[in-house]
Length: 184
Image (cartoon, rainbow, N blue to C red; front, side, top):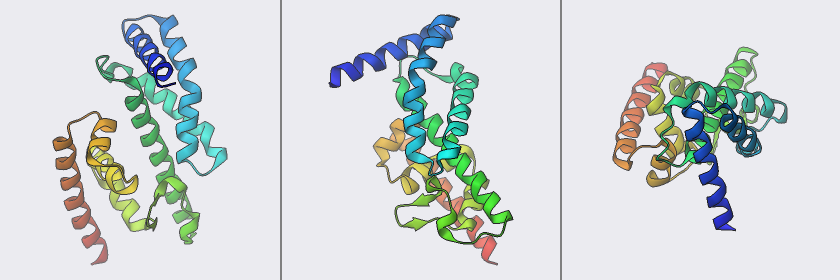
């Protein structure tokens, strides 16, 4: 079973490499085969079934526009999962802002991706997260909202554990400053 998964992942990686070299057929193949995988990842992160397909389309667009950033010597699936996770979190933030504008204050009204293991995230924290640089927001989200280990988070982000720790530290410091300003 594990070897079948590894073969599939290697095949997808090869197709993406070929796509980066201009092979349109390989690009079509990788997108077609990635679609159920992306849908599954997004479905697990987005609580609203109606939003799943919108987020899946967003992920495919992001893959398309960022395909030049993929490093073929690295596994493809963590790169795709990161894109899917970021698109899901962005959707959750948009939804939270929409709910905030509509005056909804129930914590349960927040999308699933905007909740931590300890419960819903406050709107103030969502606003503060939105103001962080993308790399710091990603590190904080992976470690604190998704509850990943430093090693797992670094692999998902495609960076070293040390670099992830640095981004997270800077993100935590910025969040403290931003949240402190909101309270005053």
